Length: 375
Image 1 (cartoon, rainbow, N blue to C red):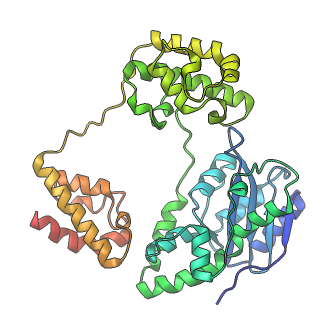
Image 2 (cartoon, rainbow, N blue to C red):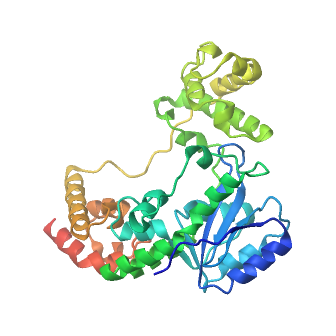
Image 3 (cartoon, rainbow, N blue to C red):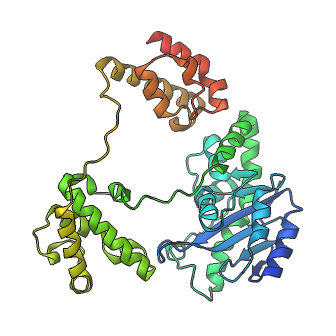
């Protein structure tokens, strides 16, 4: 059995140290990897720490101090070295966003845990349940500003804790997956994860996804767009997240009540009014004069009663399969595919849709065909 890494933490703060560390890592079969960013304090955010562990080494790499990070690119792209990560979607996007580096040979312990039928798949609960180790994850460290220097020994050990146990976790998870004959399923899902890329939001449309904006009518959305663009401009100028400039609730209120006094907006204090009042009023004026903004409509018509009934039965089929296999139902079959099958219950082309995995096709095609025949 593979044990957790107990090697002392080694700081990597210059180009030569990075070259030496990556040279060692490149000769390993697997390495554990994690990152720390500063999204809670800086805007735009960036990666501030990169943790890499082998069976005998644990490095905390400081990308803010290193001028040439290309050795990392070589390691990430080497398919013969498995990169173990937990909840890797953030790491994958962040490496692509900051440097254009991409993964090959990924093994995500979150994905593995879900396919092993484990319900508590956060890193802390997973380490506790499978390894019997209490991994303390303090909120104040989770939300630390990792761009500040120097970092305290406590912060560095916290960061190191995110990679110390990943190899031991993989060992336990693989045993479960092999017994369930699901190891290839995890491999396919991880391969799909490798293709994730950072997709910067369109500033002209990103406001539509802000929670609470659904209450606004088309004219209110026009005003809200201008308010959000105003806030984003100041967030970039000051280098801090937009929510630290002005709260969402204040902008939504002002967009819905453009004639109100600024101080009436929830979360907008007197300091905010003094600092941003003139700009907020200007943004409101521009929004009022702009054409109403209508949310994009889906081209899909409302389902008929027959289609709705088919979808209900297809959902029931998915739940039954999930219960039988003791898996989360979202893993069984993509909802978008079920919705299409509810409209046109012909599976021959649908099973080759981009959302459908090979393992899903092999495992569920026969059962799904039978369900559709019953419909």
